[in-house]
Amino acid sequence: MKTRHKAIVICLLTCIIVGCQAKVTRVRIAVVAKSTTSQFFQSMLAGVIAASSEYNIDYIFQGPAKEEDYQTQIEQVYQVIENGYDGLVLSAIDYEALVEPVETAIAKGLKVIIVDSDIHSDLVHVRIGTDNYEAGRMAAEAMLNQTKEDLHVGIVNFSMNTKNGQDREDGFKDTLDEFERVKSINIINVDSDILSATEATKQLLQSNKKINSIVTFNEWTTLGVGYAIEELGIKDRVCVVAFDNHPVSVGMLETGEMDALIVQSPFSMGYLGIEYAYQLIMNKKVHKSEIATKTVTITKDNMFDQENQKIVFPFR
Image (cartoon, rainbow, N blue to C red; front, side):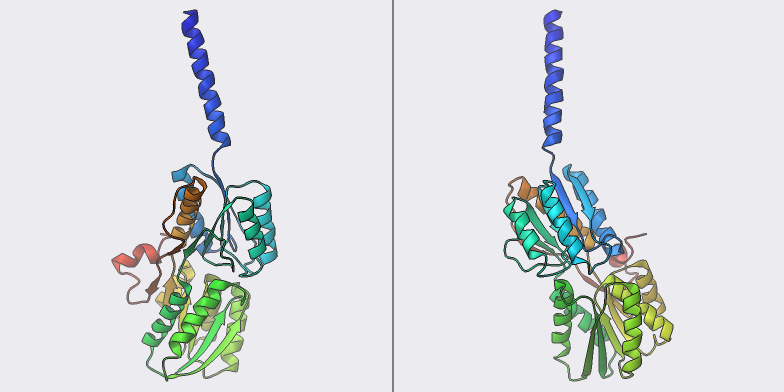
């Protein structure tokens, strides 16, 4: 009996030691987003949670209060390094300013995945997100399809230092350049928040009476443009092509302030960001260094199609 009891004790101790070791060596991944409050980044968080649960990963999800606050984002990346995380999934606010902290993280051994918005570095392990130039082309094509009139276009973009917004603008403009009926393009840049976008859009429309089409490229500016159109009462005169699927924006698509939404896949970005970081941390080979997630053009005519339901209404 004594021998048997001794064996049981040894077995239990072994299990405890192994369990403790497993806990100590559990993979830790930090996700640093542009912000944490938008529907877009909440959907990305849902993807992060799903992948972290599947792969048994410890994660944090953080970001600045405002999408222009690259300095706070830099500080958060350095904190991730200091706290000894194994991987970093980053949606960068500034294409240049985040290079040094990210390359420092890589030098310290972190696996770095860029999602949504890029940085100017060749050292990043994997890039995952919308093909932003193509998304800009999709926005231009949607605008051209909505009206046969000559176009006087207003572009309401966010920070000029954010890579995804500039790529979308480039794709949009390059596509419109192919059409003679595009007579003018007016560009403004605003803070990535509803109030700034609303007021700037109203000023743009009031100072350029010929503008009959507007494009904008993210969730907050989409809401701002929509509210400006609503407040001015000009939804029947101005065509609006915008981005993302905030519930209010989807409602505006139904009521006419929006004519088309370019809808991205932030859930996939979050999920794949964690998945690829985990694979690299575990020294598994990844077969792609760039992954384009799905982007769909949604209009009032196709928003209730069965294949678009989960894309347009993920919050239901």
